[in-house]
Image (cartoon, rainbow, N blue to C red; front, side, top):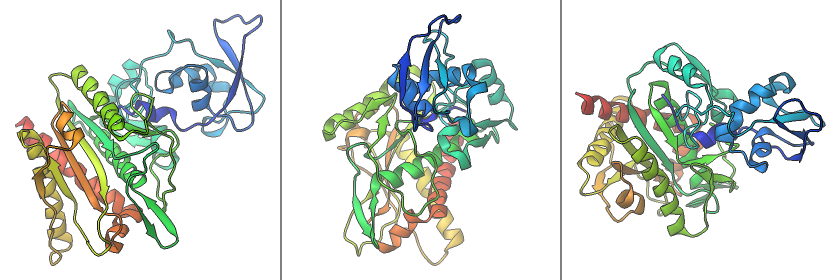
Length: 368
C-alpha cells in the first residue's frame, strides 16, 4: 500500500537554512539554524538531502525540538541526518511512508511499513495529503500487489489549458493534480503502491473552489520540470519506465490525467484514450468507462453518459510508457457545466472515487 509519492512526503514544509559546522559536537551530524520562514523541506533540499529519503530521519533526530505540525522555531538549531543513516521509505505513495521520491513519501521504517500493510485497521500519517487528509486508514488489501503511476498533466512552467471562471483563472494542471492526489489516497487505502509522478511540495488535497496556479511542481523522483514540451514528456515517461523495470512481474498500470480545452459551448463527459496495441490498456479504460456509466445511470438515470474509449497511439506518454497506459480527459475547462465538475471539491472527489472503482474492478478481473 504505498504510493510512491516520495516527493510528496517532503513537501509539507518550506524553509531556508544556513548550514554551519558543529563545533565540539559529539555526534556525527551537521547543524543548521532556522531563520524566519524556514521549513523542513527546503532545509533538506538546500543542504543536498532528498526530502523523500531523509525526512523521517530528520524528524527522529529533532522530534523534541519541533513545533506544531513539525514546524521549525526561528533561531533554533537542528541536526541534519547523514545520508547513510536515513531509513529508506517503503514505497507507499500515499499511505505508508516510503523512500522513493514518487510515492507519497511517507517515510516509515521497513518493518513498521510491513506491519502496516498486514494490518487492515492501520492508520498512518501521510503529510503529503495535507493537514486535513493526512490521516490515512488502510481499509483492506484488495489492491495489494498492484502498482500505479499517476501522471497529472502539465505542471511546473506549463499550466496546461486555462480558462476564466468569473473573475478567476482556472489552470488545468492544478485541477488534474487535485483529482490525481485524491485518487492516490483512495488507491493507497486498499493496499496499492502508487507513484505520483508529478508532485507539488506544498499542495496536498485542497477543498477550495479556486486552486491558485503555481509553478513549483517537480517530476519524480525530484527533478525540475523543463520548459520544452517534448523534454517534459520524455522526463515523466522515463521516470515511469525506470520504476516499471523495478516492479517487473507485478500488475502495473499508468494513468495520465488531463483536463481538455474546447469551445465554451461544448459540454463533454470523461473520456479515455489507449494505445491500439495495448489490450490491457483498453481493458483498463473500458472498465473505468463502464463504472462511470453505471454511476450516471444510477444517480442521474435521465442524463445519459457520452464518454468514450478510443485509440490515440500518437500521444507521447501512451506511445512510450512501458506499463499499460491510459489517458483520461476529465472535461472541458471552458464549459460552464464542466467547470462545476472541477471547482466543486465534492465533484473532484467523486471523479477520483469513480476512477478508483473502475481501477479496482480492472485489477479484480485481472487476478481471476
